[in-house]
Amino acid sequence: MKHEQSNLVTVPVYKLKMVKDAEHRVNICKPTSADSIAKLLLYLGFHEKPCEEYHVIYLDCANQFAGMELISMGTVNHAIIHP
Image 1: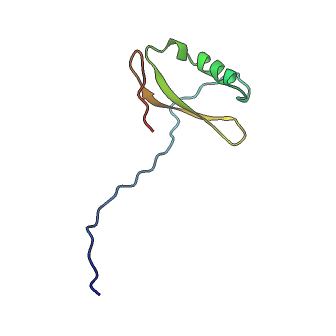
Image 2: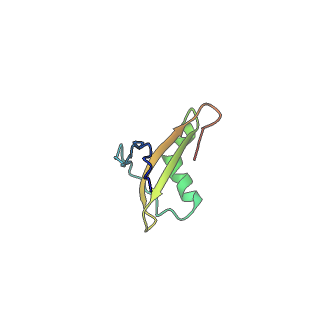
Image 3: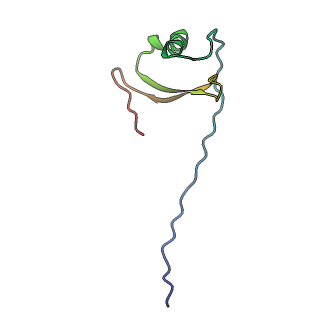
């Protein structure tokens, strides 16, 4: 039986690490509702942004804020998000 040799392809592997960029002290309890998240975003000035932004808010297993990351910045009327 003859063993066929296939074309090998190199596939790059990436690792994403979170690096703290800034820190804000906010007097907000554990996030228990969308209202508590909205208060955080108002405090951080998201209502004054000139264009739409898509952020991810990370919570730990005790529902404490673990971090926040900007995923996409849009234009005046939309932000492009792809899975």
